[in-house]
Every structure is written in structure tokens, then in C-alpha cells.
Length: 92
Image (cartoon, rainbow, N blue to C red):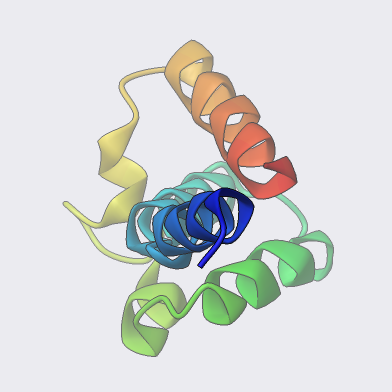
């Protein structure tokens, strides 16, 4: 195996663990639902969470129960920061 192949394989392994990203996207979805954003505008977040192999029940329940994913963000700034971080991770 060449050096390039070994580096690509190592990078692929890092990128294959998207569980943290799936949890973040689910939390963002919960925050958006809790904030009362138009449900029709949230389909992309729902799809992203499911594509990242998030727990379907967690995606369904996000923002709909006390102590759920929406409770992860203390304020709007923390929520916005999570959105930016998720965008960066997805772009990577």
C-alpha cells in the first residue's frame, strides 16, 4: 500500500464516524422545532440527520419533549454556533 493510499484510508476512517455529527444535526433540528420554525423548512435537517444514521426515534422526537435535544443549547448564540460547526463538518 502506498503512502497516499494509507493516508486516504486513515482519512476515510475518520470521516466514517459521523455519530457526533448526526447527534449535532438532531439537536439543531430539535432547537429549530422548539423555536417554532416552519416545519416545511426543516426537511433538509431531518433528511441530513437520517442520512447520517441518526436514531430515527430521536429525529422524530427532537424538540418535542422536555430534556430532549432542544435542551442542549443554552441560548441562540450556542445554537447558531452548533449550526456553523455542523455546516463545517458536513463540508469537510
